[in-house]
Length: 91
Image (tube, rainbow, N blue to C red; front, side, top):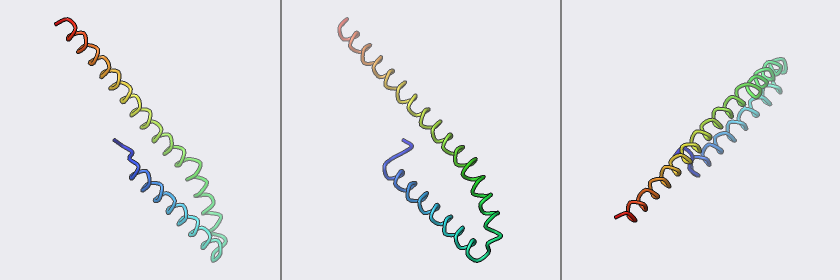
């Protein structure tokens, strides 16, 4: 299983910490070296408009694959159960 509640909590905490750290770095650079803030804004634009959507797409694709696997295995299990019931009735 890919996502347990413990893993989801850990990922959420890590992403929150990373976001807070990135914002703190940006604010410190803006305060002490304002011209570099323009470069940081461009980096943020690239990250949040390209990399984050691609990461979300990949996660969604993994979720779709796992849901399809679960549906197929549930269908196979139902088929096997019906076959067992038929075999029991015929004997």
